[in-house]
Image (cartoon, rainbow, N blue to C red; front, side):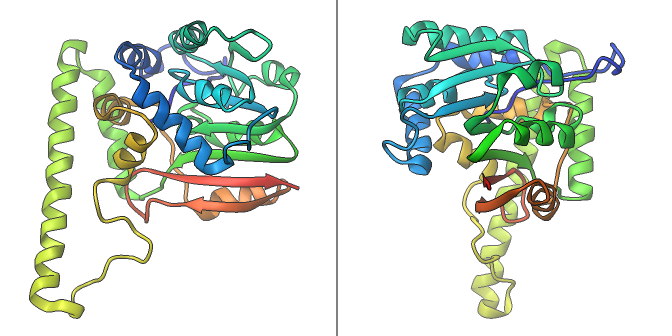
Length: 297
């Protein structure tokens, strides 16, 4: 999941636990392949077309590994990337170095989307992209508002935010806090344990639904319209975007701060600020991120 920690306010306590998003991205970058880069480029091409980013300005908020900044650069965009986590900034700069991109074509800096004095001088962009990031800032609604302010008139805002599942989301909040509380050497084992239990429950649920459909046919509860009942949408989407399952799982289980939002709340918030929805891809009320494409009128 292209998600990384990008912001906090100075009023937050210094002892507030935070997941090391950048360190996780640095390990991901060590094994980055051309196939993964191609998948990332293709995921942007599917949205914007072959020429859709050429010559346009592209802001990557919470660049993480830098993979999607790289993808936008390869599609001809003028890219500005920033991240709160210094390790993530180093990752993005390393990809820019490998790409031999100039500073004019691809700028990289460290900063927080919650820092108005940092964000304001950046200006406005044709495309503002933040996939799985703003819900990790510790102040998601302010982060969304600041990201929206970066969109130029007629521009596109593309964000992905964790879906609000009510009690289930509260349970995941506890899982993430526990990850940060245990000794570091136990964290990989914890990820395998939680990931294994989660994967097993998903598999059992899928087998149970299939059994009900076999026994009772149309009397069994049908899948929700438009819902993907194949592998978990969180992981499926990320693999299609060039990510890796293990690093996504570590990010998902350990990623804190953590906030969630229902699609209707996000849409109401942004529509009141002059945006109109052009596309929406939900995870069907399930675990994962809802993706929003909005145009600023």
